[in-house]
Amino acid sequence: MAKKRRERERELERKRRRRKKLRKLREKYLKAKSEEEKRKIIEKALKVSPFLTEEKFLSSINENSGN
Image 1 (cartoon, rainbow, N blue to C red):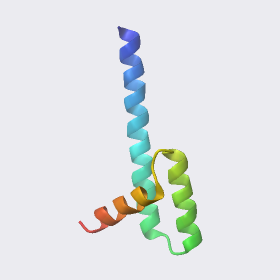
Image 2: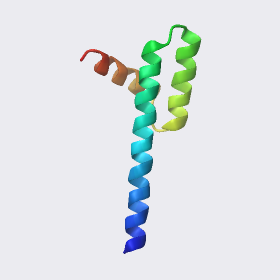
Image 3: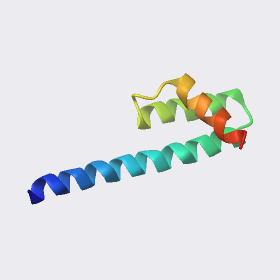
Image 4: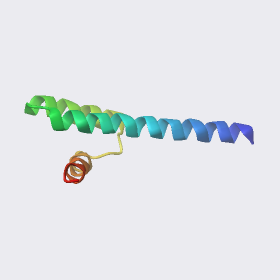
């Protein structure tokens, strides 16, 4: 039982860390000046979160910047 709990805690921690990294990358993307910088940030985001698509990453930036 305890083993399952530890695995779940690790899973949740990885998820939290991934969200935090993606949040930082989104902020960096908004501050980026050149297209090359933006491309590198998108590539890094896709490495951090392989299931994420470029469109999804960009749409979440557009949703958050409107608030």
